[in-house]
Image (cartoon, rainbow, N blue to C red):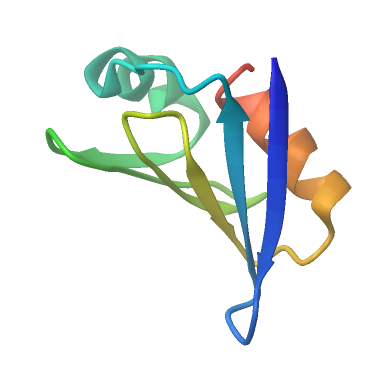
Amino acid sequence: MASQVVQLCGRDAVQVRVYPPVTLSLPALAQRLLGSGRVRYNAYVLGFQSDACEMTVFPDGRAIIKGVTDPAAARALYARYIGM
């Protein structure tokens, strides 16, 4: 699966998109992440915060990773917590 990483100007954040787009189950992802940090979600978005990062994840697999400006670091955090 390929990904596109874009640094968001002035936000100290990176957006990661996967191609082809996927459909994530936010409740299942929330359950998986519970032991790794604080998780909040609804039908539209999942918020995750750990010592390593703060993430906003959308059902299409897109994620905004805050506190990161390096694309390689963003991809690594995405792979670690989202798993793609």
